[in-house]
Image (cartoon, rainbow, N blue to C red; front, side, top):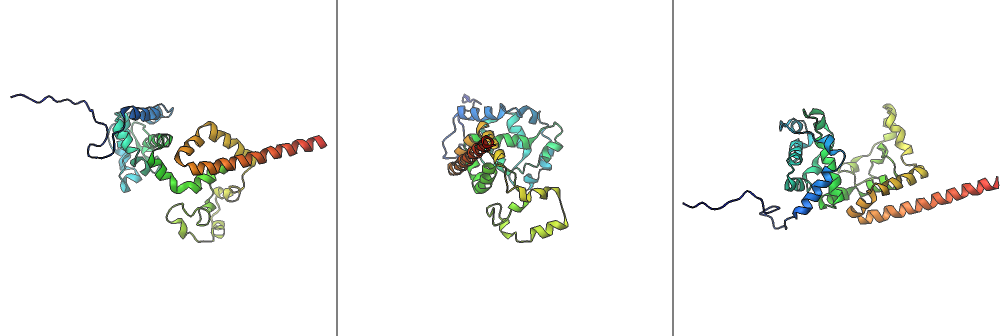
Length: 252
């Protein structure tokens, strides 16, 4: 009885039951290479016992279709198709708490690996990254345009109504309540709104030289245009300030 000739060589990339066109193998390799070439990669991935301790202690694994162990296994075995699929949804469920890193016997950091995958998803302008970041455009506008940290008082329905489903319910005398429990972090509640102009200008240079602005342009072009306009305006203010300083020195 003749046996049919079979092979284990995979010649189809993608979901066989999906109508979506398969992704080119070269593109999958490019995505993985970007993840693997990061300097942090070898520090975050050291092997895997497949013990599941990371998943057992992961808060996100209890509520979402997410497993830190799966992320480590995909990268350790270089499963290009699985890595790409995970970048479409699963990696965005990670809470970045790094409990997994604290418990892993091998010293892996699944949370750190997820961070690399997220950054690569943004670099390649994946739709999953756009969908996740779209609701937080006002937050990104504040952080990138001013180059400053967020303060507790900013999380209000007046300033960031799109920051989470419960922010609209916040209605309390925060300043009065916080006087009862003073904390060092509350020192920023006022200064976070007042940003030194020179600090912003220096950070704009960092955003440009590190490729942050280029990545932002690929994710949200409208937000990119708004931020670049703000940056150009503040740079003009800085030039005017320096010119005034020189004039004062000449007069003296």
